[in-house]
Length: 365
Ligand code: FAD
Image 1 (cartoon, rainbow, N blue to C red):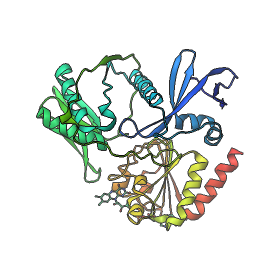
Image 2 (cartoon, rainbow, N blue to C red):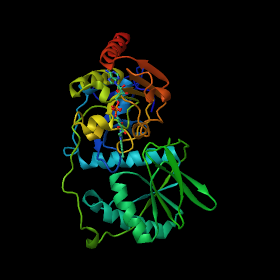
Image 3 (cartoon, helix red, strand yellow):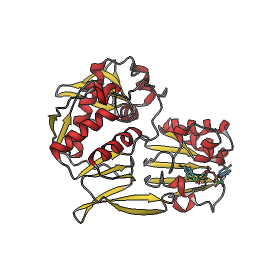
């Protein structure tokens, strides 16, 4: 997709004024399939393309874009738009990241029943394709499916891996322990090796290519429809998602209390980023668990990570140390976070953060 300069009343315009397409729809893809996110479907002369809402928003300017587009919730979304978004996304993702074949099964059972039908489908695919390695993202749905699949195929599984590599005719995965201070190398002793990889633990390389799309023919019988989804809730947020944000500003106990977190929100909105937190403040009830970064929270790898009033315990840093640039704001020059920071600012966060926000806003004017 060329660089976009503007969306005007559903027309997608390049900086030189050329119209590159029409905005066809906005889709919300529910969690489990992809991270819950909004996607814009754009019709171009060469076909339909899907763009992540966050990328569009970042290119065009979140607020200007919001004023021009109608958003829709998952519940209001036409099924066709959702399916189209998923199909186009599948194709875009696999083409970019080098998959040779994509197997598709569109049984409606997958809409409401997840773990058991998915286990049936993967067990059947295993019979047909006999892969040596089956990879899952380390997500709640995947854990459900991978555990069942491992039991069905009578093999073990390696969970929470940060890396996986072929070695001596098998696969070895690196799994963190002691809060990420140590790494264990775990080898699967049977095939297929089933490995759950922690999202964002390594970069997905764009290698190009075109994937062949094949139908996976299976019948989902009644016995596989015992547990089903009873409700779907779309997180009520139009903000940039923590896991997708290019800039993350996380607050810790040094923020002094929940009333000071809006200072971080202001900075995040000036930088087009998202706000995270340490476990200490989540446990204290200042912010929800969905904002926690670290061993028992989310892993992030943004371009810039700003740790504000966070000491830098290893259980926190394991979730953010892959960030490209780390900035720490802490009143203690000896805090452990300062040792890993590319830039350390020593001082009172409650004074530094508003000053930084004002400077960013002034620069944008
Ligand atoms: P503190 O350690 O109390 O640090 C506060 C910092 O703020 C200090 O460095 C202080 O100098 C600074 N400060 C104070 N006032 C100011 C000010 N006005 N301006 C600037 N700086 C100031 N933690 C996580 O974050 N994520 C996890 O996922 C996680 N998982 C864990 C799992 C296990 C099994 C265990 C045992 C612990 C886990 N923890 C996790 C907790 C972790 O060990 C730390 O206790 C926690 O990260 C500390 O949070 P903090 O840095 O906000 O608080």
